[in-house]
Length: 260
Image (tube, rainbow, N blue to C red; front, side, top):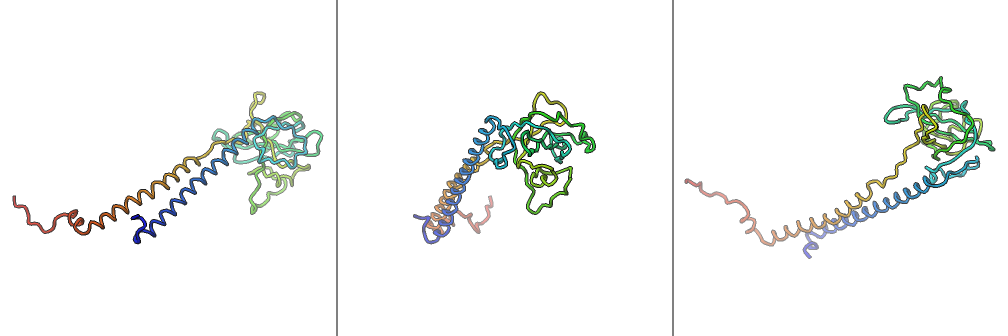
């Protein structure tokens, strides 16, 4: 076969290796797509599951696996230890989220509750009482995992009011009771009006571009060898035809000018 002639064999092998790599990349994207679909199915199962009734004994709950599941808690807010989450957006407007410990009935533990968003122009750290709600109640929200600080990040000082992430391990240092290792984000409801506006983290369950990327890699794996084979074939045919073809294809040289 002309592609495996001595002059082409190294290049041909390189093209074949590249095609194999492209096929492998295509299957890798399909594997990622399968993983994403499995994650979406698991997330939808959590979203549609019955609310989990929290008792304060859920220290080993896998919040990442049960993210988006609804949870119900009976107890009382502790506004004295409320903290503020900075740099939060709502409809492209900057603001803050209020995170309030919620003392769980029948337990010595509490859970942090993201009560919602307050506009930056409305917020005053000295007037957090303006955003207080009924202290004792039953709340229902979505389970969310904590956002741990990077290993190299410094711990904020004890008593810090404003935080950039919900780092429960760090927040535990300034709480007089043990916190559950995840938090609850309240979802919008008709009974609540005004600030704080319920604004839980957005649920994103799209498959992403993996299928499109897989198709592209498979096409590359098909097209590149074909184009290479066609080019090699043309070059071999031209070489076999010899210099006469080259002279026939080249424009005439040193012809006298046409006096007409």
